[in-house]
Amino acid sequence: MKKLGIILVVLSLVFGLSLAAGAAQVVKVGTNAAFPPFEYVDENTREYTGFDIDLIKAIGKQAGFEVQIIDVAWEGIIPGLLAGNYDIIASAMTITEERKQSVNFSDPYFNAEQVILVPASDNTTRSPEDLRGKAVAVQLGTTGDFVASDLPGLRKVARFAEVTDAIQEMLNGNVAAVICDNFVAIEYMQANPHRAKVVPGSFFDPEYYGFAIHKRNTELLKKVNAALAELKANGTYDQIYNKWFGTK
Image 1 (spheres, helix red, strand yellow):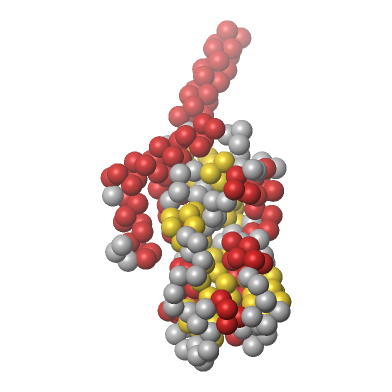
Image 2 (tube, rainbow, N blue to C red):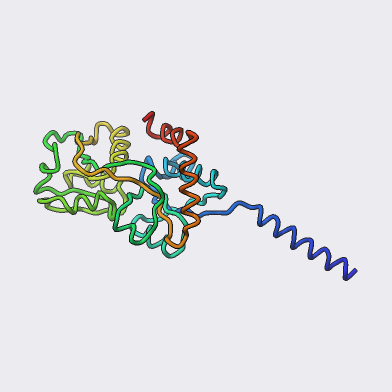
C-alpha cells in the first residue's frame, strides 16, 4: 500500500506538471483605459475594449500567450512596468527618445499626430500661433503635453490625469483648446459634433505608437515583434484597423 501510495503521488505530480507546461503563458498588459478609441471600458459590457486592446489580444493569440489587462493611471504607467507590475504597456504610447532610455519599444504599430481641439463655436483659431496669450489643456505626460510645453507664448498649460478631463476643461470655458492625439480628438468630435472640432491642418511632427516592454525582457519583445509582423502580413492587423477607423 505504501508503494502504491508513492506511485500515485508521483503520477499526480507528473500530471500536474504536464498541465502546467501545456497552459498558456499569461502576460500582464498595463493600459490607461480612458483613451478611446484605443483603450477604454465599454459602458454596456464593462469590459476593456479599443484598438490597442484588440491588437494586443491578437498578438497574444499569435504568439501563444494569454493577455490580462490591468488598468493603471497614465502618469505611473512606465514606473509600473519597471516595477514588474505588468509585462507590456499597450496604451497608445508614442515612441520617444526619452522613453527609450527607460524601456524597449516594439516595432511601430500606429501612426498619429497631435492636433488642436477647440470648441465648435471657435472660428478664430487656425494655427498654434492663434493660441498665443491663451491657456490650453493636455493630458499629463503625453506627447500633447510635450508639444504644448514647447509652444511659445501660451499663458498656461493645464494638465490633467485623463484626456477626457482636459476636454471638459475646454468645454467649461477655462481653456481655449486641447492638444491631443488626432484619433482621440476625432472620436470625440464625431460623438459630439456640436461641442468640439479639430482645427484643420498638420502643425506638429508625426509620431508612432509602440508597445513598451522592460529592457530585460528581450524574449517577449522578440515574440511581440514577430507576432505583429505576422498579423500585418496575414491581414489581421488591417481587419482590426478597419474595425476602429475604417478602411485606410
